[in-house]
Amino acid sequence: MNIAIYQTVNAHAPAIHWWLAQDKRFGPQLYQGMAPICNGEQIGSIVQEIRNEDIDADAYDIHQESLREMENKEAINGIVDCTSRYFNAMKGHWGNDEDPIVGYQYPVWSNYFGCTRYPNSVPLGDKLLFAKSTTNDDAMFYITQYAFIKLTIDEINDHSKIWWEDHKLMAGKVLDDWKETWYRDYHDQCIADFHNGKLQYMWQLNFAHWDLHNMLAENKSKFTLDYSIERLFKEKHKTDDFNAEQNAIKSMTDNNVDHLLVDIEWFNNTDVILDYLGIKNSKALDDAALLYKERYKIVCKSYEELSNKYYKGN
Image 1 (spheres, rainbow, N blue to C red):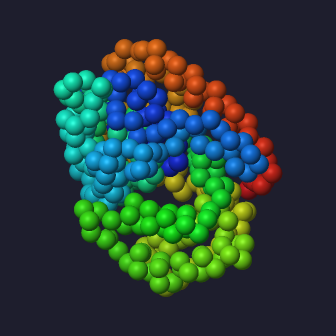
Image 2 (cartoon, rainbow, N blue to C red):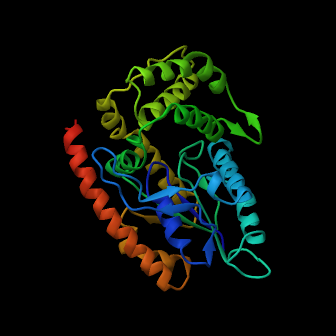
């Protein structure tokens, strides 16, 4: 049985994947669990993706390509087949310390960024866990996990490269003019803004990357770099992405897609998830859910304090 865990915004799909993969029946493990930092604005991830230097290279490459396909392939009856190659590889090449390696009993796929090209479609899986979110959930996950990571010059270079490879490359082909435009018109300005103190944090660079994406999608000729912290909280509380989430949920129902909606406090309802999957519980799953819950509560408290400092609502 292949298990897909999907989120349309910053949410808890990676957390559920991390939780399942603590049990060797599930895999591969694509995420690491982390204790929150809670150091001023920087709170820190509870679960963070493992990048290519710390994971089997083949597994990493196949998963990254599946995310590119997720964002760019067409759907059939509300389903995007971006996962078949990944699931097939997980059955045949990586395993649970067995000899010979026979693969995972339950291959698990999830996305930690992006969404399908059209909001009324979802990735293919035998069982689909849909990480249902809210605007505040999205803001909390993005702001605590990514936003206030301090940048260096090397990270500006590295993360710009990672961004276009994640979003603008598929099957080795560059998909549009984003890369050319970024390095011609904006990258050097970001370096200068770093040196003059305007550009400090991951979210500021990430917003610039998406601003260029939106500029090209809207056939505009330029955009203005905007690093204001007020923009961060305002943008992350917009409701547009949640209209898209509702479209995806409606489409799953209309197309009779087998799925389970799972909210942000999934760790209180692991029995419901396991019943849906038809899989028995284990001590590894119980322990991982409890650890995540403890860390989640710390992050919620710290984020509430941070949000009260910078965001007054509409």
